[in-house]
View (cartoon, one colour):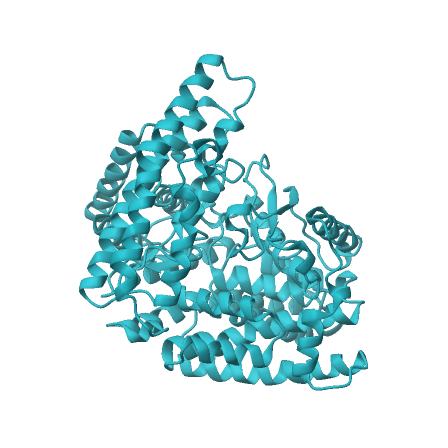
Length: 610
């Protein structure tokens, strides 16, 4: 599909929605209309986020990247969300099955909350990276930013395919769109400078060195040139020569100059005016925006104060559990002394080659696999791999999971950063694997996109509070899955849970209570065993993505609450595999819909067992 045709299709789609609005009849619509509505929404989601489409295995938009921070794009989205909400309101829900009802409710929530964000004074847009919201005035950051994600794609081993000549040409077309996005981003940041809406200085300082490798004139070693080194042997010599020439031209004439321009802009114009404050409430309309982001990320109406207090309570509870675990290890000293002990305990850093780390996680997968049938009925068909994080982003990256393609040709990947293998501490490795890989993100996201009963718009990663809530809940399944036999690994699980509880405190502290970066760092140092460098990176992540870090613990607590509720209500009729089926077989749901679903399942199970 040519880029011109894609733009035309986008325009036609808007016209189609307008016609739907103008010509709709007064009668309530049928299930056939519902299927069409879901189909239209799926097409809309692919058009507005081509990278997500590629990730899910839809190749038709592989030549585009959305300029999602532009005003024109935001205006179009508001029109389309409005049209979809009108169509939703006209659907007769009588007779819908559970899957249809939950899908319609999820679609309505998504359209409503996204439309509200776009209409705010500080417009909140959706980034192609894991569907994360971001402020249009803050399009770039030191983490989870499109300019970093595109570089990951450019290496040729991520979600954009480099198999055919067209794949290579599609990437050149995507680069053109990406450069437009960078221009829009700098323009938006210029407007922010004019209105005192700027990023914290500490974040800008981290962004500038990240650009250095892309400004290099060494073409052969340039990250964006790597696909040329990986050209399939099946390509003709003419195609190889043509692509090498085109990639060299684009890199030397467009990519390097644009990165140099961005670097100069950040150094000379933006950094001198970056703010000393840490939280979004320090900028105009920031407090209102944060309240919105809480609702968006948690799918609840909890206030910042409520979440802050919940975090304090959870930190206190987990500290007590840590004390018990520490006593089981016969350690003499207080919790802070134990934190220092595990940071420097040599037996927790046993590797001297990166390959050993990867093998360690693969062995863990085999151990879990032996116990899965006792805890899960459902298993994904998708393949799974453990890989080391790419070198260009390894120093500042966290471990992460990238879903495989829907067709199974690209496996799900658990990326592990190993910047210094001799310092790689295994304390939290079992909990980390349960979270990012099996049965965390790999199970939930793979099962979601393999579920043919769901409308296709529910197949990609979506609700962070559900996705991350499930993954954090998965960490608690370690003993049921044959892990945490090592007391240090059990303490590591508590450390991971503490890390997420701390997020409730420091995220709300930074963005709603005026905490400084240094206050948040100190609070974390006092309550978890991570290194100071790791804690600083995390705090700066929260500064860059207000509210996102709240989703983990809020989602986990709700899933655990629903499991406890189900166990109590069903007694001997409770089966954990059946409960996990209910959580995992409807896609990513807002928490209110998940709770409704579990309540219905409890009642149905009771009725069956009378």
